[in-house]
Image 1 (cartoon, helix red, strand yellow):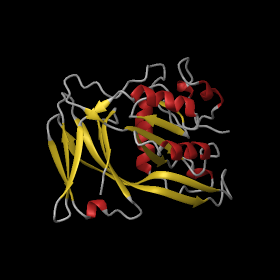
Image 2: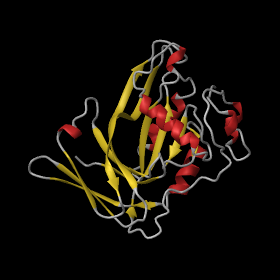
Image 3: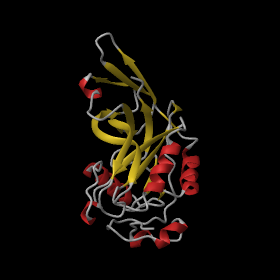
Image 4: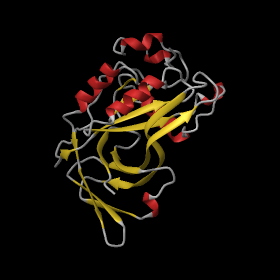
Length: 261
């Protein structure tokens, strides 16, 4: 089994499975900090929000298929929003990941710099609510992170489609914290036949793969609306869309919703 792990991440509070991992990229920070739950709304008006589970994976990583299968199982839980984010740094080993996006790689590196438990630049990795991370195939560790986030709540996110086909997203609540609002276009299922590399000859399956994402603006803790056109919700290869409300600098995710369109 191969993992990409940073030397700086090998610390007393890291998960035990990290010790056998393979170093791949460098990032700063230490995993010795305690995972931070993603609420901290001191004066918030809140409602239930799904826990966001982001899987950083690659077609070039032989350790990733079990994590991809775990993501598929987790996605059946309606209290979770599972997002697969294939990364690019395995491409140099002979197989270019057909689903990888450089934006996914940048996000993982930004998370790594936060120094949360399980942070680092490696695959497979799952990050929960933009906070703590774990080896993406270690179901027990992942579910522990999910349990930490289960009591978290966020702003109320509502959608309405008018007679012209425009979708209005309304985010309401009260908070002193600013947060960015992003629209993610997802493919609910992808199957890839890998021709070369560590997974050469295998057929791999992926769940809720990011096809595109863009910033809609910011939420300042009061009621805010965003209008989405038909083109915004017609991204090639995508069959579902999600709203993510996240503190700046790849901070904690405080709100999320899978759009009903």
